[in-house]
Every structure is written in structure tokens, then in C-alpha cells.
Picture 1 (tube, rainbow, N blue to C red):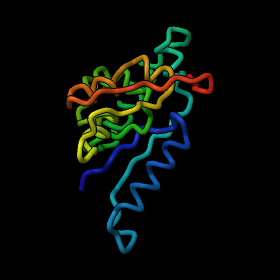
Picture 2 (cartoon, helix red, strand yellow; picture 1 turned 60 degrees about the vertical axis):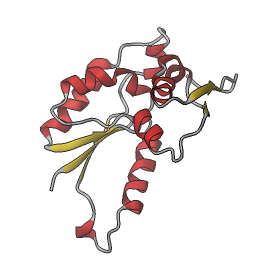
Picture 3 (cartoon, one colour; picture 1 turned 135 degrees about the horizontal axis):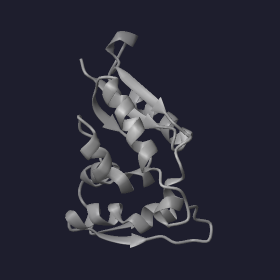
Picture 4 (cartoon, rainbow, N blue to C red; picture 1 turned 45 degrees about the vertical axis):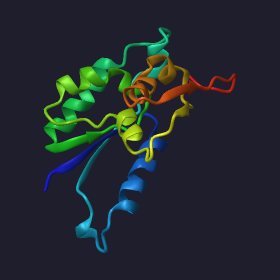
Length: 153
């Protein structure tokens, strides 16, 4: 059975939340029935949102290193429970020998039935990147952005 690669640590709580959902939603009655997972929790990766907004260091080399690690670990698919890292999705996918799930495309595909319009609540970096808006537009769904002084980078 192929392993699932989880590229996490961006932030650590998002990784824990993803893993909790993966375990709870797996129809297993004993340990041996759970999915094999390799988790790379790498919180040292430069701030993705600040990089997108032009005020931070480029995280791409570190992102690619994480992809290399998971590929070398023999995973069959990679999930990245960090929204803003998907700004570099194309470069990560080009580097990977296995599919990387795209967070926005997966979210939009799970919408049943599709809505006419959706409010996008995200960090400034994820909003500026536009990948959620593009994934919604690809399905004919209008996006409305949320902005707030409370919004994080």
C-alpha cells in the first residue's frame, strides 16, 4: 500500500488538524486498518504570505526540499495543509514524482452543489496569490474576498 505524504508544519496546528481529520474519517476499527502516512513537519520554512506580498524571504527552496524528502520517503501522493504554500504549487508539482493535491481545487471540488458565489476568508498572502479565486472561477463560481484589519499575513 502506498503511503500518503503530508507536508506540514506551516502552521503546525493546521498539520495536526489535517491528521486528526484523516484518522477520524478513515473507516478503521484497528490500528492496522489506518492509512500509512509520512509526515514532514517543517515549521522553519520562510513565511509564505510575506513572500507573496514581497516583504519576506523566498520559501521555494525550502518547499522543494520538503517535496524531495517526501518523494524519497516513497509516498504515492502529497497533501499540504497550508493554504499560502500553494502559491508555489506548479513549481512543487514539477519537482515531485507523485501527485500533489491542490488545496483550493480540492475544496472547490468538494462543494456540492456548487454555489453561485463564495466568500474567501484567507490570509493576505493567500488572497493576493489568487489561487482560491481561480479555482472558483474555473468552476463558474464568483468569489468575494474578505478583508479586515484583523486579517493576518
